[in-house]
Length: 68
Image 1 (cartoon, rainbow, N blue to C red):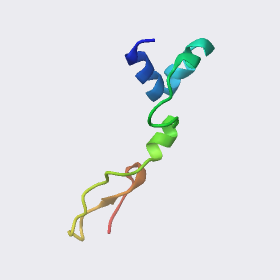
Image 2: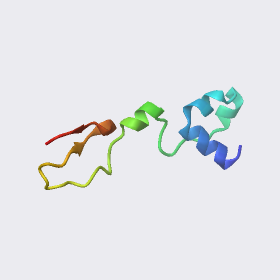
Image 3: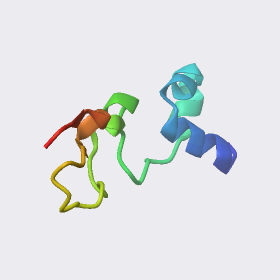
């Protein structure tokens, strides 16, 4: 299996689910773990810079913004 296919299988649930059982057994372990796309979207970190402007909107998980 080519490196690009391995990386795609790690990142794309739909692509990984389209692989045969034999192809899946050939995949090396994902160094980032085996998170689904939904789980990946819930990972936080490297957030927005903190602002001292009290009128600025702050954004949380899934870009839900709220007024301060």
